[in-house]
Each structure stands twice: as C-alpha cells, then as structure tokens.
Amino acid sequence: MNLRGLDKSRLPRHVAVIMDGNGRWARLKGKSRIEGHRRGKASVRAVVEISRKLGISYLSLYAFSTENWLRPKDEVHALMGLLEHYLTVEQPKMMRHGIRLLAIGDKDRLPAPVFHTLGNAVRTTRENKGMTVLLALSYSGRDDIVRMVQNIARKVREGVCAVEDIDEGMISAHMDTRSIPDPDLLIRTSGEMRISNFFLWQIPYTELYITPTLWPDFREREYVQALLEFQRRRRRFGRTDEQITQPFQSCDRGQRTQK
Ligand code: FPP
Image (cartoon, rainbow, N blue to C red; front, side):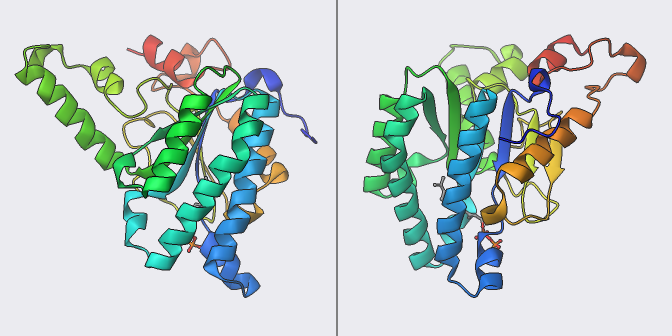
C-alpha cells in the first residue's frame, strides 16, 4: 500500500461513505447500470480491505437508501442480488480478518433471502473485534430519527423515562447507530454536494470530503487522498483555535469536552 505521507496515528476512527456514481460510470463506459453497481461492489471490497489494513475501527457504507426502493424493479433486484452475493462471499474473509458486520435501516423491507443472509452474517461476525463495517440498507437519516422518536415516546408512555430525561445522550442511544461513535470523516463520491438523507443526527462535526471520482473508480489512491485531506483539517468542535491543545481528536472526544 502506498501511504504517501499518511500519519497512522491520526487516522479517523470512523469513516462513512456515500457511494455515488455507479450509473454515471456505466454510462461513460457504455455499460449497463448494473455493471456499474458490479464495479462498485469491487470498490466496496477495496475500501474495506484498506480500512482494515490501516486500522480504521468503523466504516459505514450507504449501500441502499430508503429512496432507492423507487428505482426500476430490475435495478433494485440486481442491487439486492449483488448485496446477497457480497455477504455470502465475503463472510469467510470477514471471519479471517476479525471484521464485525452491522446493518442499520428498515431491514424488514429487504427481500427474504437478503434479510436472512444479512442476519446470518451479522450473527456469525458478532464477536469479531478487528473492525466494524456498518451497512446502511433501506436506510435514511430521517427514518432513523422517526424510529428514535417512536422508541423514546414509547418509553415515556410506559413510564420508563420522563420527558425531562431526554437529552443528546438519550437521543444518540436510540438511533440505529447507538453503539457507534459519530463519523470523523464523511466521503462522498461523484461530486454531488449533498448528504442525500444519509446520517443527519450523527454528523454535527464530521469532516466532509467530496470528490468528483465516481464510486467504481474510488480505490486505494483516492482513499488515501481523502485521508490525507482529513489530516490537514483542523478540528475545533465549535471552539477557537487557541483552545485546541491537542492537534487531533476524534468526534466523540471533541463533543464530550465541548461546552
Ligand atoms: C449510487 O450510484 C450507488 C448505489 C445506489 C448503491 C451502491 C451499491 C454498491 C456499491 C454495490 C453493492 C454494495 C455492496 C455493499 C456490496 P448511482 O446508481 O446513484 O449512480 P448515478 O448517480 O451515477 O446514477
């Protein structure tokens, strides 16, 4: 791996990725959109592999949004097939490398074979301690917030907690991402300047990195570029430059000390 000056002691703990541009990549190459997604799957494998080698603890991938259900049926079907294939083929590798798989989103909407393969992969890798790969499937940030509000409202109704108990910590603890620190770096490929209903609550101080590279072309070189750019950022978490004593902090440490 060519790390080109990357400081391994200052890597993000959690990287989140909006993988975009499979369709445009396919169009540019005169191939089908499904071929674009197939190539995108290879980028997923590459980014998981590099993250693991570097020692990044959490990698979140926006693999299928709530809105993606509105795509043509054959494309949705192909994406589900790719996902199932990925989960099946990669599971032994995840076990070999100690990768834990988690999934967030409205999983009940997934076709039964994907639901079962996913459940099986999550269960099998549950005790792995190396790195966590978080797949956002049938996920949207607003949906996540709706689920959180419903869960807390239910607890208030049942008398488990009071309205006054609701604070940022409680909200975070009821999001799909409850056991995961906020992302330090959010990468979006294909140049679009938007969040597209991915993490909303989780990214108040996340560094954003948007590259014109299309997802199927996003491999080691582009990933290292993003990490280098992250290391050039000065994270202040709402404070002044002078107040920053430590040159590097990851998200939740910053939030805890910020007042
Ligand atoms: C966006 O490209 C990408 C997706 C909707 C899905 C991402 C899926 C993969 C990378 C393949 C399989 C995933 C896993 C986890 C194995 P787009 O179709 O929106 O591209 P466009 O904007 O250029 O049309």
